[in-house]
Length: 159
Image (cartoon, rainbow, N blue to C red; front, side):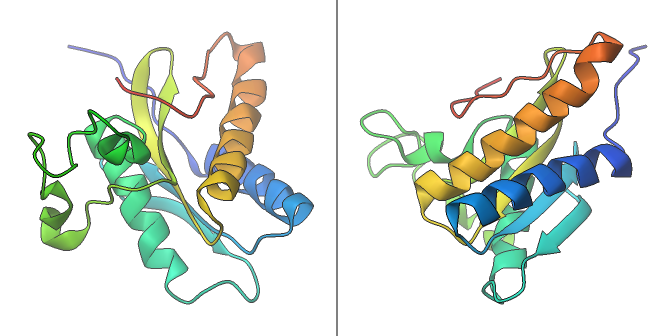
């Protein structure tokens, strides 16, 4: 039997607030989705004026990052990205009724070495989505540090 950490609404909202602050700071309209370890949303926020497609894309990214335990852009990072043509997972983005996102903006939430969820961001370019995602992960790290937990707050996560 294993004891597992579970991401709760308060932590998800804390992460979203940090991502929204960063989005405002860099001038981008984002949608942010925080998902549990099964890839289902705990919380989602779409900024006023953000694209109407953002919620589905952000959820797909969070779902993929949580379920496959890696940053979504790693699937298509040359030369060895597994979803690139000719590589072992080419076409994986067609999995899960098209929910699998193989491009930048999804990050697993790793606490004490375990993936407990995912964050997906949609609205900016890859660099902007990454900045907002890293701000959210750093905010969770700061929130949990006094409790003795460590959070992986980096772009290239593969567990």
